[in-house]
Length: 388
Image (tube, rainbow, N blue to C red; front, side, top):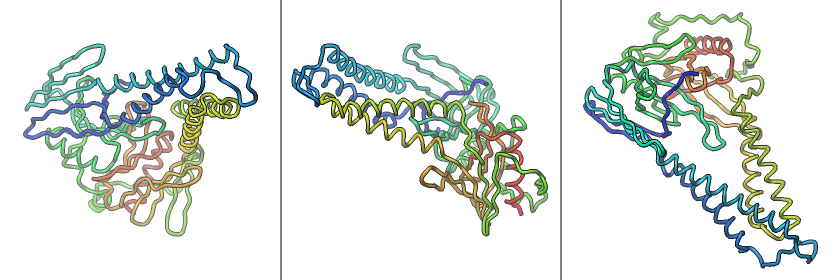
């Protein structure tokens, strides 16, 4: 896996006027505010209970009036200390992430980069704009807590990843391609895309025509074969007014293994909380909170783990939907006459390919866990359906 630039923010726009501008890339305080509050409450809850704030000095069981042995009192104290430790560790981790940042300054042909890390001080680099290859677009798949999301990245690419510059970061696909064109035009550099055929360099002047227009002008070749065998992992359903393409089975990877581990741990915590509620008068509030939180995490994660995605191809548009255990959602859609490209692009962070359906103001990323040969069939099929 190649080293890639590491950015902290999920929403960033580098404002540049006359090739001059300053931008700071760091985690927004509001994005970790809830985690900080919960971690402090968790630590405070443990400290309050440790000081016997939830009961009398004598602890009794619901099933009788005998005093609990010293060993059980010590066990309860250990449970409280775990709450305090977890709360403090989460708070410290979030604050450490907030205090680090990257700062970028562009002044005509010179780019200055300052990187600050909590235990390593500051590093400063000066780089000439001539040393940058182009403006790259890529999609990162990442986790926000327990939820998987896409982050759309437009960056000024340098051979040394530490010297690449984020120009636009967003978890929304709205307007990403427009931003890509604007920055490429500003710096007069080619657009770079990682595709299944390798690195692709495109002049920004050639990116304003839709696939339908390119087909009319004879510059786009339809290579789809209707008799080609359908990929094993894809299901093709032809309905009265639409075509549905969906992935036949659930495809899990290392990220899913982590989610399953969290589900198991949440189950254990929920059982521990329920047991405490039934058999003890101590830690009752803590047990209720722990059980509710654990069950909520399990429900959300199970919905995410069993989520399936599909493409619904209608007469004038393509719709990207997610099907969960109990419901479905329309994630995104693009009108056919607005689609400017269908590419198999590569996420350099995990070496994973996906099909990108791209318009000037929107992008659909589909099939990130499919094999490359299946994605190539899908690309040919989609282009055929768009231009016909």
